[in-house]
Length: 378
Image (tube, rainbow, N blue to C red; front, top):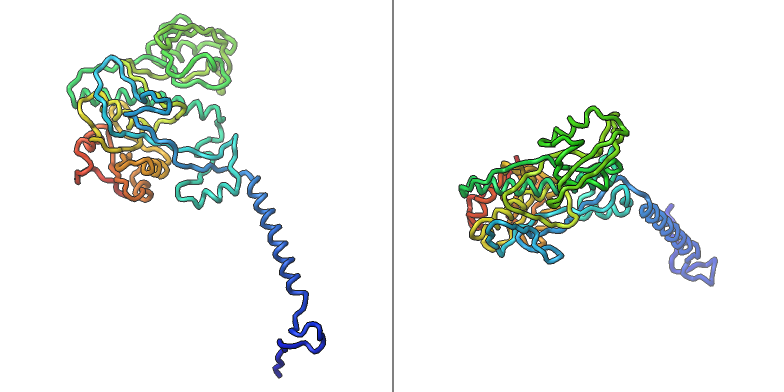
C-alpha cells in the first residue's frame, strides 16, 4: 500500500494549513552554526599550527650593468677602461617565508601550495638541522663574497682567452667565513687577507691550520690581517672546537689579487647563484661594444675560475621574477634545464649556458639566432 503525504493542507493543525513543521528550519540553522564554528576552529588551528616548511617565492632581480636601490652601480671598475651597456644582464634571486625564527603556519603553507608562483619545501632545504640561523646566514654571506671574486677571476680568464690579454691571477690566504660565537666572531670578517698568525707568515690557506695545530684551548693566537689596504692585529683566545681541537673560529680560503679593482655591491643578498651574471656583467663592461644589444637578459648559475657554470636552486621562481621584470631570454645552467623546461613562463626563451664562454657566444649571436644552445629534458 502506498500512501501519499498531503502537502496542501494539514487537517490535524488548522493553524498550519501547508503541513509545515517548525523543526526543520531550526535543525538547518543548528547544523550551519555548528559547521561555522568548526570551520572557525579549524582556521584558528591552521593559523597557529607551525609546520616545518618554507615557502619560496620570486625575489628581487638586479641588473649587473645598472644601479641598485641606492642609485650606485652594482659593479664599479677602477684602473681599467670600461664600456657602458644600456641593456640588462640581470641576476635573479629567491625569497622565502618561514624558517626557525618565523615559522610558516599550516594555513599559509596550504595557501602557498596552490600558488603557481610559489614552492613549499621542507625547512631543511634552507636551514639544515645541525646549523643555526646565524650559521646559515654566515655561510650565505661567505658564498656571495666567494662568488663575486670568482666571477671577477672568470671574467679575466675569459678576457685572456678571447681578447688575448695577459692578466695573471694571483692568490693569497684569506678568511672565507667566520663561525658565530667563536673567538673571531665580531673581529675578523670574510675576505680579510691573512698576513700572519703568531708571527708566522701565511702564504696558503693551509698554513693557518698548520701554525695553530699544536695549540690548546685557552692559548693565545695573534692574527694580523689586511682589510681595505690597512693591516690590523687581533689577539684571540682560542676556544675548543667540536672535535676537541683549539680553534679561532674561521675557515681559511683563497682570495684573488687582481691588477685593477672591481667592486660589486648588492646589499644583503647572499648565496653563490649570481656568479654567471656577475661574470657576464664584468666582461661586458671591460670590452668594447654591447654584449646585450640593448636587450633584457637574465639568468642564474654558479661560476668557477675556468668559467664552468653550475646548478642552483629555485629556478622556477627565478624565471618568474625575470619574466615579470621584462626579460626576453634566460640563461640556464645545464643541471637545471630539465626543471626549467617544465616551469618556464610563456615568452621567456631559455638558453643553456654550460660555460661563461658559451654564454658570451650566445649573447654575441643575438636573440634572433636559431642555433643558440637549447635546454633539453635529459
